Amino acid sequence: MIYSVSSKRGWNRATKRDLIALKDHDKDFWIRKEVLHALVLGIRDQLVVHLTGGTGVGKSTLVSVLPKNWRNLCRNIGIEYRNLVVLPVPLIHYQGPEELFTRRAIQNNGTCDEDRPPLLAAKKAMKLNGQHDVIIWFQEVGRTPPSVQNSLISGFLTDPFYDHNGKNLGRLDACVLMDSNYQDKDNGNYLLHELDAALQSRFTLQLTLDYLDQDMEKRVLRELIDVPQDQLEKLVQFTHQLRESKRAGDYKSVPFPTFRQYVALGKQAKWPDFEMEEALRTVFYGGAGQGDREKLDSEVKNLFRDIDPDSSTKTS
Ligand SMILES: Nc1ncnc2c1ncn2[C@@H]1O[C@H](COP(=O)(O)OP(=O)(O)OP(=O)(O)O)[C@@H](O)[C@H]1O
Ligand SMILES: [Mg+2]
Image 1 (cartoon, rainbow, N blue to C red):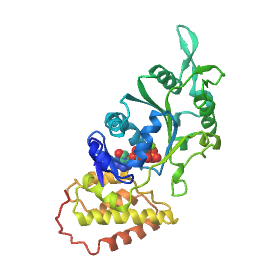
Image 2 (image 1 turned 90 degrees about the horizontal axis):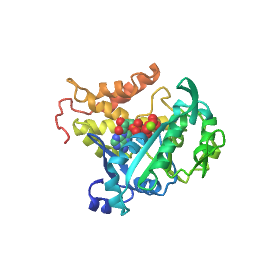
Image 3 (image 1 turned 90 degrees about the vertical axis):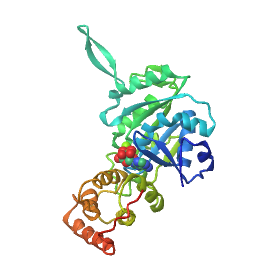
Image 4 (image 1 turned 180 degrees about the vertical axis):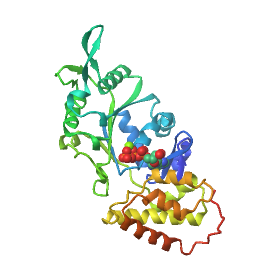
Protein backbone atom coordinates (compact mmCIF):
# COMPACT_ATOMS: atom_id res chain seq x y z
CA MET A 1 0.00 0.00 0.00
CA ILE A 2 0.97 3.64 -0.48
CA TYR A 3 0.24 6.27 2.19
CA SER A 4 0.70 10.01 1.96
CA VAL A 5 3.16 11.57 4.39
CA SER A 6 0.59 14.26 5.10
CA SER A 7 -1.80 11.81 6.74
CA LYS A 8 -0.83 10.80 10.26
CA ARG A 9 -3.52 8.15 10.26
CA GLY A 10 -2.04 6.74 7.06
CA TRP A 11 1.40 6.75 8.61
CA ASN A 12 0.15 4.88 11.66
CA ARG A 13 -1.66 2.36 9.52
CA ALA A 14 1.31 1.73 7.19
CA THR A 15 3.40 -1.35 7.91
CA LYS A 16 7.19 -1.22 7.72
CA ARG A 17 7.14 -2.48 4.15
CA ASP A 18 4.46 -0.09 2.88
CA LEU A 19 5.41 2.95 0.87
CA ILE A 20 5.15 6.53 2.06
CA ALA A 21 4.63 9.19 -0.59
CA LEU A 22 6.77 12.23 0.15
CA LYS A 23 6.06 15.54 -1.57
CA ASP A 24 8.48 16.48 -4.31
CA HIS A 25 7.93 19.57 -6.53
CA ASP A 26 5.21 18.41 -8.83
CA LYS A 27 5.22 14.67 -8.15
CA ASP A 28 5.63 12.28 -5.27
CA PHE A 29 8.66 10.37 -4.06
CA TRP A 30 7.96 6.89 -2.75
CA ILE A 31 9.95 5.19 -0.04
CA ARG A 32 9.51 2.30 2.35
CA LYS A 33 8.34 3.41 5.76
CA GLU A 34 11.00 1.46 7.67
CA VAL A 35 13.90 3.16 5.87
CA LEU A 36 12.33 6.59 6.18
CA HIS A 37 11.57 6.13 9.85
CA ALA A 38 15.14 5.12 10.70
CA LEU A 39 16.53 7.93 8.60
CA VAL A 40 14.48 10.62 10.35
CA LEU A 41 15.49 9.40 13.81
CA GLY A 42 19.12 9.00 12.71
CA ILE A 43 19.18 12.61 11.51
CA ARG A 44 17.69 13.85 14.77
CA ASP A 45 20.27 11.86 16.76
CA GLN A 46 23.14 13.12 14.57
CA LEU A 47 24.28 9.66 13.55
CA VAL A 48 26.79 9.05 10.77
CA VAL A 49 24.50 7.79 8.05
CA HIS A 50 25.48 5.78 5.02
CA LEU A 51 22.64 5.87 2.52
CA THR A 52 23.35 3.31 -0.14
CA GLY A 53 21.61 1.41 -2.93
CA GLY A 54 21.87 0.97 -6.69
CA THR A 55 22.11 3.85 -9.07
CA GLY A 56 18.81 5.65 -9.65
CA VAL A 57 17.01 4.22 -6.59
CA GLY A 58 16.50 7.77 -5.41
CA LYS A 59 19.17 8.43 -2.77
CA SER A 60 19.88 11.99 -3.86
CA THR A 61 16.24 12.81 -4.44
CA LEU A 62 15.30 11.47 -1.02
CA VAL A 63 17.75 13.72 0.80
CA SER A 64 16.72 16.76 -1.18
CA VAL A 65 12.99 16.28 -0.52
CA LEU A 66 13.41 15.78 3.23
CA PRO A 67 13.22 19.48 4.22
CA LYS A 68 9.82 20.07 2.68
CA ASN A 69 8.43 16.92 4.30
CA TRP A 70 10.15 17.37 7.65
CA ARG A 71 7.23 18.91 9.53
CA ASN A 72 4.93 16.04 8.60
CA LEU A 73 7.61 13.47 9.36
CA CYS A 74 8.30 14.87 12.83
CA ARG A 75 4.58 14.97 13.56
CA ASN A 76 4.00 11.41 12.30
CA ILE A 77 6.86 10.01 14.33
CA GLY A 78 6.00 12.09 17.37
CA ILE A 79 9.19 14.11 17.75
CA GLU A 80 9.40 17.86 18.27
CA TYR A 81 9.60 19.83 15.01
CA ARG A 82 12.72 21.78 14.15
CA ASN A 83 13.66 23.25 10.83
CA LEU A 84 15.82 20.86 8.78
CA VAL A 85 18.82 22.34 6.99
CA VAL A 86 20.61 20.23 4.38
CA LEU A 87 24.15 21.31 3.49
CA PRO A 88 25.28 19.42 0.38
CA VAL A 89 28.97 18.85 -0.31
CA PRO A 90 29.60 17.25 -3.72
CA LEU A 91 32.70 15.14 -3.02
CA ILE A 92 33.30 14.58 -6.68
CA HIS A 93 35.08 17.94 -6.86
CA TYR A 94 37.83 16.99 -4.43
CA GLN A 95 40.92 15.09 -5.45
CA GLY A 96 43.05 15.48 -2.33
CA PRO A 97 42.53 15.84 1.42
CA GLU A 98 43.70 19.45 1.71
CA GLU A 99 41.08 20.54 -0.85
CA LEU A 100 38.33 19.89 1.69
CA PHE A 101 39.43 22.71 3.91
CA THR A 102 41.07 25.86 2.60
CA ARG A 103 42.90 27.26 -0.37
CA ARG A 104 45.25 30.14 -0.89
CA ALA A 105 43.39 33.13 -2.23
CA ILE A 106 44.27 36.69 -3.11
CA GLN A 107 42.56 39.36 -1.07
CA ASN A 108 43.39 43.05 -0.62
CA ASN A 109 46.68 42.67 -2.46
CA GLY A 110 47.75 39.90 -0.13
CA THR A 111 47.08 36.20 0.28
CA CYS A 112 44.86 34.46 2.75
CA ASP A 113 43.43 31.00 3.42
CA GLU A 114 39.93 30.89 2.02
CA ASP A 115 37.53 28.27 3.36
CA ARG A 116 36.38 25.74 0.80
CA PRO A 117 32.75 24.50 0.61
CA PRO A 118 33.13 21.45 2.91
CA LEU A 119 34.65 23.56 5.66
CA LEU A 120 32.11 26.31 5.04
CA ALA A 121 29.31 23.76 5.40
CA ALA A 122 30.80 22.51 8.67
CA LYS A 123 31.11 26.03 10.05
CA LYS A 124 27.55 26.82 9.04
CA ALA A 125 26.35 23.64 10.75
CA MET A 126 28.13 24.61 13.94
CA LYS A 127 26.43 28.02 13.91
CA LEU A 128 22.96 26.54 13.38
CA ASN A 129 23.35 24.02 16.12
CA GLY A 130 20.59 23.80 18.65
CA GLN A 131 17.56 25.24 16.90
CA HIS A 132 17.79 23.15 13.74
CA ASP A 133 18.24 19.63 12.53
CA VAL A 134 21.27 19.70 10.25
CA ILE A 135 22.57 17.28 7.65
CA ILE A 136 26.02 17.67 6.16
CA TRP A 137 25.54 15.65 3.05
CA PHE A 138 28.71 14.29 1.47
CA GLN A 139 27.55 13.22 -1.95
CA GLU A 140 28.70 10.17 -3.89
CA VAL A 141 31.40 8.52 -1.81
CA GLY A 142 31.65 5.97 -4.62
CA ARG A 143 33.32 8.60 -6.77
CA THR A 144 35.63 9.91 -4.09
CA PRO A 145 39.35 9.10 -3.98
CA PRO A 146 40.49 7.09 -0.93
CA SER A 147 42.70 9.92 0.32
CA VAL A 148 39.65 12.18 0.50
CA GLN A 149 37.57 9.46 2.14
CA ASN A 150 40.29 9.17 4.72
CA SER A 151 40.45 12.82 5.51
CA LEU A 152 36.69 12.82 6.02
CA ILE A 153 37.41 10.71 9.07
CA SER A 154 40.03 12.92 10.63
CA GLY A 155 38.34 16.05 9.37
CA PHE A 156 34.64 15.58 9.94
CA LEU A 157 34.03 12.42 11.93
CA THR A 158 36.00 13.10 15.06
CA ASP A 159 34.78 15.08 18.01
CA PRO A 160 36.12 17.75 18.07
CA PHE A 161 37.03 17.86 14.43
CA TYR A 162 40.28 19.05 12.94
CA ASP A 163 41.38 20.68 9.71
CA HIS A 164 44.29 19.49 7.57
CA ASN A 165 46.73 21.49 9.73
CA GLY A 166 45.55 19.76 12.88
CA LYS A 167 43.66 22.84 14.10
CA ASN A 168 40.82 22.04 16.47
CA LEU A 169 37.64 23.42 14.89
CA GLY A 170 35.18 22.49 17.59
CA ARG A 171 32.19 20.20 17.81
CA LEU A 172 30.25 19.42 14.68
CA ASP A 173 26.66 19.24 15.87
CA ALA A 174 25.12 17.68 12.80
CA CYS A 175 24.14 14.46 11.18
CA VAL A 176 26.81 13.51 8.65
CA LEU A 177 25.19 11.66 5.77
CA MET A 178 27.09 10.05 2.92
CA ASP A 179 25.51 8.48 -0.11
CA SER A 180 26.99 5.88 -2.41
CA ASN A 181 26.04 2.88 -4.46
CA TYR A 182 28.51 0.45 -2.89
CA GLN A 183 25.71 -1.81 -1.80
CA ASP A 184 25.04 -2.58 -5.42
CA LYS A 185 28.58 -2.96 -6.64
CA ASP A 186 28.06 -6.53 -7.79
CA ASN A 187 24.97 -5.60 -9.76
CA GLY A 188 26.47 -3.69 -12.61
CA ASN A 189 27.14 -0.38 -10.93
CA TYR A 190 30.31 1.33 -11.89
CA LEU A 191 32.23 2.63 -8.90
CA LEU A 192 35.32 4.75 -9.33
CA HIS A 193 36.78 3.96 -5.91
CA GLU A 194 36.59 1.38 -3.16
CA LEU A 195 34.97 2.27 0.12
CA ASP A 196 37.67 2.86 2.70
CA ALA A 197 37.22 0.30 5.50
CA ALA A 198 38.08 2.82 8.19
CA LEU A 199 35.41 5.17 6.87
CA GLN A 200 32.92 2.32 6.69
CA SER A 201 33.57 1.54 10.35
CA ARG A 202 32.47 5.07 11.26
CA PHE A 203 28.95 4.62 9.95
CA THR A 204 26.45 4.34 12.77
CA LEU A 205 23.35 4.03 10.62
CA GLN A 206 23.49 2.08 7.38
CA LEU A 207 20.46 2.19 5.16
CA THR A 208 19.85 0.66 1.77
CA LEU A 209 17.29 1.94 -0.67
CA ASP A 210 16.13 -0.96 -2.80
CA TYR A 211 14.53 -1.02 -6.19
CA LEU A 212 10.82 -1.57 -5.67
CA ASP A 213 9.35 -5.01 -6.21
CA GLN A 214 7.25 -5.56 -9.29
CA ASP A 215 3.87 -4.96 -7.65
CA MET A 216 4.87 -1.79 -5.88
CA GLU A 217 6.56 -0.49 -8.97
CA LYS A 218 3.41 -1.00 -10.98
CA ARG A 219 1.36 0.97 -8.48
CA VAL A 220 3.83 3.80 -8.49
CA LEU A 221 4.12 3.85 -12.26
CA ARG A 222 0.38 4.09 -12.63
CA GLU A 223 0.71 7.54 -11.09
CA LEU A 224 3.80 8.44 -13.07
CA ILE A 225 3.14 7.20 -16.59
CA ASP A 226 -0.04 7.49 -18.59
CA VAL A 227 -0.25 4.37 -20.77
CA PRO A 228 -2.77 1.52 -21.06
CA GLN A 229 -2.63 -0.98 -18.22
CA ASP A 230 -1.51 -3.91 -20.38
CA GLN A 231 1.42 -1.89 -21.70
CA LEU A 232 2.38 -0.86 -18.22
CA GLU A 233 2.42 -4.52 -17.18
CA LYS A 234 4.78 -5.30 -20.05
CA LEU A 235 7.00 -2.39 -19.19
CA VAL A 236 7.48 -3.59 -15.64
CA GLN A 237 7.91 -7.17 -16.78
CA PHE A 238 10.60 -5.99 -19.18
CA THR A 239 12.56 -3.94 -16.65
CA HIS A 240 12.42 -6.63 -14.00
CA GLN A 241 13.54 -9.32 -16.42
CA LEU A 242 16.36 -7.07 -17.52
CA ARG A 243 17.43 -6.42 -13.94
CA GLU A 244 17.43 -10.16 -13.28
CA SER A 245 19.45 -10.89 -16.42
CA LYS A 246 21.95 -8.20 -15.52
CA ARG A 247 22.31 -9.62 -12.03
CA ALA A 248 23.03 -12.98 -13.66
CA GLY A 249 25.79 -11.33 -15.69
CA ASP A 250 24.01 -10.89 -19.05
CA TYR A 251 23.50 -7.72 -21.09
CA LYS A 252 26.71 -6.15 -19.94
CA SER A 253 26.45 -3.26 -22.41
CA VAL A 254 22.96 -2.29 -21.20
CA PRO A 255 22.60 0.08 -18.24
CA PHE A 256 20.66 -1.00 -15.18
CA PRO A 257 17.02 0.08 -15.63
CA THR A 258 16.19 2.77 -13.09
CA PHE A 259 13.56 5.29 -12.20
CA ARG A 260 15.34 7.84 -14.32
CA GLN A 261 14.33 5.87 -17.35
CA TYR A 262 10.76 5.51 -16.12
CA VAL A 263 10.56 9.27 -15.79
CA ALA A 264 11.89 9.66 -19.35
CA LEU A 265 9.47 7.05 -20.62
CA GLY A 266 6.64 8.97 -18.97
CA LYS A 267 7.65 11.97 -21.07
CA GLN A 268 7.81 9.95 -24.27
CA ALA A 269 4.37 8.56 -23.51
CA LYS A 270 3.03 12.06 -24.21
CA TRP A 271 4.67 12.25 -27.63
CA PRO A 272 2.39 11.76 -30.63
CA ASP A 273 2.56 8.25 -32.13
CA PHE A 274 4.02 6.84 -28.92
CA GLU A 275 4.75 3.14 -29.10
CA MET A 276 5.85 1.27 -26.00
CA GLU A 277 8.04 -1.19 -27.90
CA GLU A 278 9.96 1.59 -29.55
CA ALA A 279 10.20 3.53 -26.29
CA LEU A 280 11.62 0.51 -24.43
CA ARG A 281 14.37 0.37 -27.00
CA THR A 282 15.27 4.07 -27.02
CA VAL A 283 14.93 4.53 -23.29
CA PHE A 284 16.50 1.34 -21.95
CA TYR A 285 18.92 -0.17 -24.45
CA GLY A 286 19.17 1.85 -27.66
CA GLY A 287 22.84 2.61 -27.03
CA ALA A 288 23.92 -0.93 -26.12
CA GLY A 289 26.19 -3.19 -28.14
CA GLN A 290 24.70 -4.72 -31.27
CA GLY A 291 24.45 -8.25 -29.85
CA ASP A 292 22.62 -7.09 -26.74
CA ARG A 293 20.32 -4.85 -28.77
CA GLU A 294 19.31 -7.68 -31.07
CA LYS A 295 18.65 -10.04 -28.17
CA LEU A 296 16.55 -7.45 -26.39
CA ASP A 297 14.65 -6.56 -29.56
CA SER A 298 13.51 -10.13 -29.82
CA GLU A 299 12.66 -10.30 -26.11
CA VAL A 300 10.54 -7.19 -26.50
CA LYS A 301 8.84 -8.61 -29.56
CA ASN A 302 7.93 -11.75 -27.65
CA LEU A 303 6.70 -9.76 -24.74
CA PHE A 304 4.31 -7.74 -26.91
CA ARG A 305 3.13 -10.58 -29.11
CA ASP A 306 -0.22 -10.87 -27.37
CA ILE A 307 -0.94 -7.13 -27.00
CA ASP A 308 -3.77 -5.64 -29.00
CA PRO A 309 -2.29 -2.62 -30.78
CA ASP A 310 -5.61 -0.78 -30.65
CA SER A 311 -5.88 -1.14 -26.93
CA SER A 312 -7.13 2.13 -25.49
CA THR A 313 -7.73 1.35 -21.84
CA LYS A 314 -5.80 4.20 -20.33
CA THR A 315 -4.69 3.95 -16.74
CA SER A 316 -5.76 6.61 -14.28
N1 LIG B 1 11.20 5.84 -5.23
C1 LIG B 1 11.15 6.85 -6.11
N2 LIG B 1 10.05 7.59 -6.22
C2 LIG B 1 9.97 8.59 -7.11
N3 LIG B 1 10.96 8.94 -7.95
C3 LIG B 1 12.09 8.23 -7.88
C4 LIG B 1 12.25 7.14 -6.98
N4 LIG B 1 13.48 6.62 -7.13
C5 LIG B 1 14.06 7.35 -8.08
N5 LIG B 1 13.24 8.31 -8.54
C6 LIG B 1 13.56 9.29 -9.60
O1 LIG B 1 14.63 8.74 -10.35
C7 LIG B 1 15.60 9.73 -10.65
C8 LIG B 1 16.96 9.30 -10.15
O2 LIG B 1 17.03 9.35 -8.77
P1 LIG B 1 18.33 9.80 -7.97
O3 LIG B 1 19.23 10.65 -8.78
O4 LIG B 1 17.85 10.37 -6.67
O5 LIG B 1 19.02 8.39 -7.70
P2 LIG B 1 20.37 8.05 -6.93
O6 LIG B 1 20.07 6.88 -6.08
O7 LIG B 1 20.89 9.28 -6.24
O8 LIG B 1 21.34 7.60 -8.11
P3 LIG B 1 22.95 7.70 -8.23
O9 LIG B 1 23.52 6.60 -7.37
O10 LIG B 1 23.20 7.47 -9.67
O11 LIG B 1 23.37 9.07 -7.75
C9 LIG B 1 15.08 11.02 -10.05
O12 LIG B 1 14.42 11.74 -11.07
C10 LIG B 1 14.09 10.56 -9.01
O13 LIG B 1 13.09 11.54 -8.80
MG1 LIG C 1 22.73 10.36 -6.37
